[in-house]
Image (cartoon, rainbow, N blue to C red; front, side, top):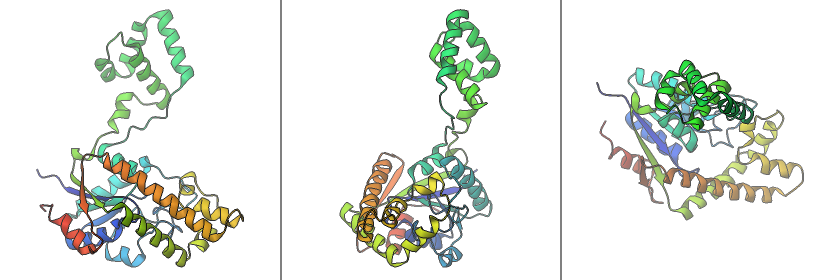
Amino acid sequence: MKKPLVLFLVGPTASGKSSVAEELARQIGAEIISADSMQVYRGMDILSAKPTLCQRKAVPHYLVDILDPTEQYSAAVFREKALKALEEITGRGKIPLVVGGTGLYIKSLTRGLFIDKGKDEQLRKALEKEAKHRGIEHLYERLKEVDPEAAGKIHPNDLRRVVRALEAYEVNSMTITELKGNMEGLDEKYDFKIFAIDRVRGELYERIELRVDKMFEAGLLEEIKNLLKVPLSHTAKQAIGINQISAYLNKECSQDEAKELIKRDTRRFAKRQLTWFRAEKDIIWIKAESIDTDEAIASKILSLLVL
């Protein structure tokens, strides 16, 4: 049986993902799932370059305007909500188009996510001490009881892995086998293709500077003033513009200086995004020339698809 198709359009900020995605969605009847860590927040419209209500009426969008800026967001929450959206969209015979520049979110969806609460050094030392006094066999037998599948893959004398598996169970209240089960990738249920918009670095930086200028013209300062009236979550605080405008409001710099800092930090962010996506082997890069319209870039993507 043929698997449903899922498309991804990724790339750095200001590369033109959103407008190209809307054009592509219109041409193939797709529905968009936002893989943006900031577009989920209500009241963060200008700051996140969120699609307008008009655009969202023309093409259905998911995971936009679903949280207050006081709430946390994460790759795990994104994955959970995105998987539900995928089922809903494909269940109606439509093509999901996942759009965004948050690399970790994309990876969490395509490859799964290993959700581990972390290490417990005291517990680890206690387990190692127990192995020293009672023998590693004692720990291995315990592992066989709580996670026989993991025990079957670990040599009985491999102290490090036996201890790690028991530590994972105690810390997470889940076996390491169950944790790894969360890493199921999309290819189990879907066929997917990942496209990225590739622009010359200098042109990308020019687009970033123009976008920031337009954000200020659209009322970015007032939007951030309103956002700062509530205790922002750790995630929301990461939005580029919050710290820079806060510095201006606290008279630590001028408005022009704040604007330049936003431009600089956005360029740096775009560079990190490019580094992340360049390292991903599954991505198909679509060259976007400065003269290319959204329709032209969408056509380049369509020419590589068999729908």
